[in-house]
Amino acid sequence: MIQTAVQETGKLWHRNARLSTMAVIMVGVLLFCIAYWPTFVWLWERATAADSYYSHALLVPFLSAYLVWRRKESVRKLQWQPSAMGFVLILSALAVHVLSMLLDVYFTSGFSILVLIFGLSLYLFGYRITRELLFPLGFLVFMFPLPGAALDAVGVPMKLFVTTSGARIVELLGIPVIQEGFQLHFPSASLVIGNPCSGLRSLISLLALGSLYAYFLAAPLRVVAPILLASIPIALFSNIVRVVMLSLITYRYGSDAASGSLHDVSGIAVFVLALVLLLATGKLFEWRLSRHGWRS
Image 1 (cartoon, helix red, strand yellow):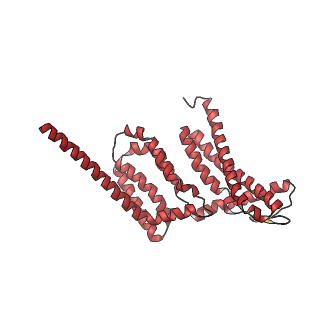
Image 2: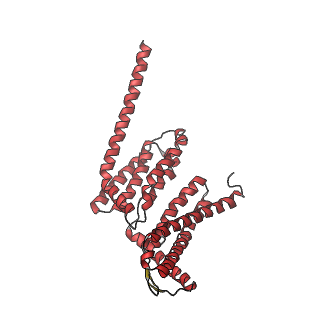
C-alpha cells in the first residue's frame, strides 16, 4: 500500500514537472515572439519582396529543424551539462536586440536571434550538445539578410561583370549591341539588366545549398571549401547564360517578350543549371578524394 502510494506520488510529481516545463517553454516562446515581432515582420518583408535575395529564407528554419531532428539519437547519448556562458550569450543577444530596436537597425536584431539560440542551447544543454548541433543551428545564418549596403557592394560589381560578359558573347554571335551601364541596346529594342540577373541571388542560395550538400556528405574541410568557392564562378556563369538568353529573346522578339513570362522561366532554368553544376562539382571532389580513402 505504501509502495503504491509512493509510486503514484512519484508519477504525479513527474507529470507536474513536465507540465511546469512545458508551461515555462510556452511562456518563453510567447515572450520571444512578442519581443522579436518587428524583426519577424522585417524578415518576412525582405524574403517576400519582388527582387529579394533571400526568398529561400522562409525554408531555412524548417531545414534547420529537420537537421536537428536528424541528430536526435546522437544528442540523447550526450549528458546535459548546462553552461553559464549560455546565459552571457542570452543577455548579450537581448541587449543587442533592444539597442537595435532603439536605433531601428533590423539587421543586427536578426542576427541576435542566432546568438540567442546558441545561448539557450549552451545554457540548457551545455557545450557537447551544442557542438553536436553546431551546423543545424548555424545553418540559420542563411535566414538573415545582409544590409542593403553590403549587398550593393557585392551585387553591383557582379551585375556589371555579368552584363559586360553577356554583351561580349552576344557580339561574338554576330548580334549588334551597345552597352550603356546595365542596359543593352539592340537595333530595335533594349534590355535592362536588373538585380536578379547579377548572380548575387544565385550565389547566396548556392552557398546555402552547398553547405547543406557538404554537411550530408560529411565532407572534410578540403572538400567543403572548394564546393563553396565554386559557388562564385557558377553563379556568375549561370547568370551570364541568362543575360545571353534574354538578349537573344530581346533581339528577336522585343523587350516585352524578355520582360514577361520568359524572364521568369529563364530565372528558374538558370538556377537549375547552377544547382546541377554545383552538384557536379561536389561529386567531382567526392570522387577524387574517395580514391584516396576519404570515406574511410
